[in-house]
Amino acid sequence: MALFSILYWLFFLVSLPPLIVIQLAIFLVTAPFDRRRTLVHLFGCVWGMIYVWVNPLWKLRVEGREKLPWHAPAVITANHLSILDILVLYGLFAPFKWVAKGELFRLPFIGWNMMLSDYVPIWRGDRESVRLMMTRCRAHLDRGVPVLIFPEGTRSLDGELLPFKEGAFRLACDANCPIYPVAVSGTGDAIPKHGILFRDRMKARVQVLDPIHPSQFGNDPTALRDATRAAIRAALPHGKGILGAGR
Image (cartoon, rainbow, N blue to C red):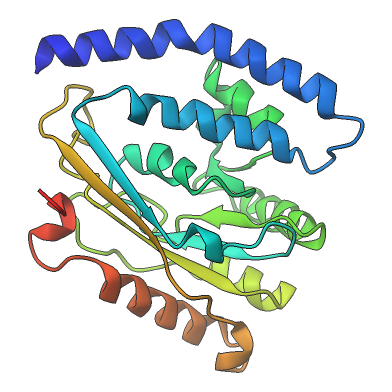
């Protein structure tokens, strides 16, 4: 497993330069008519999924992607188990903007990808960063572009669903747009939080649940948050299966 992990990450590193060149070319060609950078993002989805497709240890099932809007505001919220959640959520192949840690935007290739796609950074512990994040997300929503947020704010270490922060739900209430809960399972056992060596096979599932509209809860972000968390929790495998679904 260690040798395979090393070879896989070597492939990952070698693939970055040609992929960012392709994405930059797509950006330059489409910039005059694709102001939402939809095609740039969709290539990013292919980029992310390449690393799932080439790994024989990983399998992914995506359910309900057809529910997601393409040209309407929405806040997509997903639970967070592993760094691999980012790869498997690209399997939605829907236009959205990630809200991601600001540190990622400083990384070569990966950060350039995120900037070309017009994703939204947030810096932990910086209140001004939170305000700017909300402003940029609202601008995307006003243009009919969904945003994707991990409302737990960090990865779960044991697979248990963490408390949800209210930012995503305040955003949905302010923009009067639906929340689309997404339940992610099966990614937590594949790779440790602070490591790069694979430790298990992955059978991941990404399940898009039915939308929840703020008007169902009187535009109360707290009630919307609780309903969304309950919906995701109900869709996740129980007990040990939260980490190793489908094993």
